[in-house]
Amino acid sequence: MNKVFSNADEAIHDIPSDSTLMVGGFGMCGVPVDLIEALKRKGVAGLTVISNNAGTDGFGLGLLLETRQIKKMMGSYVGENRLFESLVLSGQLDLELIPQGTLAERIRAGGAGIPAFYTPAGVGTVVAEGKECREFNRKKYLLERGITADFALVKAWKGDRAGNLIYRKTARNFNPMMATAAKITIAEVEELVEPGELDPNSVVTPGIYVKRMIKCTPYAKGIERRTVRRRGNG
Image 1 (spheres, helix red, strand yellow):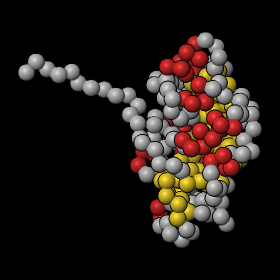
Image 2 (cartoon, one colour):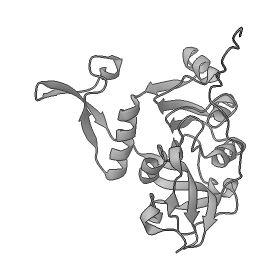
Image 3 (spheres, helix red, strand yellow):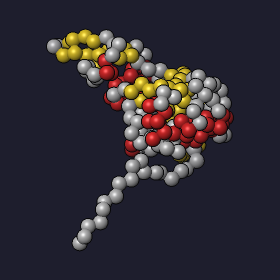
Image 4 (tube, one colour):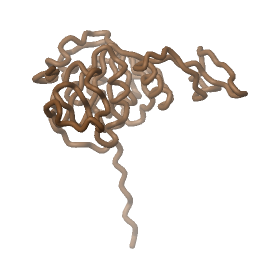
């Protein structure tokens, strides 16, 4: 089965406003840039987005924040996006801040059909507000619910036309688990090959999880936070 679409706009054609989306990426690595830019062009609004972070100013999900297309973010890190911070503080963006490991496990659980699980992360903090807390072996745990989404947008290094995906290095972050936890998973890949060309032992996401694919446009990898050392006197 050929799951490849000719471009990102066609691949996301039926994503409506008010959808819940999972978007892969960690910092500036493994981000489905072409699919995000297509969402910006489509102009859908009222989106609930589940992602580790919201990109940076002018990159990734930061583009959808600029156009106010996101109404709620569920993520674990907000430190590199000034616009994100200002929207939250001004009440223009709803934020559910989730411990990073808890976020990963909630997505994994959603993809595995597990409705909820207990974790010690967040006990005794604001994360615990409104959640069930139980004690196991004299240690307290919070009940956290699995997460699913209408669509998942993921980025892989290489994929075949049947939807099998291989990730490269740090791009194997939230992408694999998100691919399992949505009704429709759309993947963009750097290299597109024919079925049978991938080493089956290297496939991370089996094609059964992927409904649509595009070959993405190469882009220059940025630096999330540039740090330089001051020159000494010597």
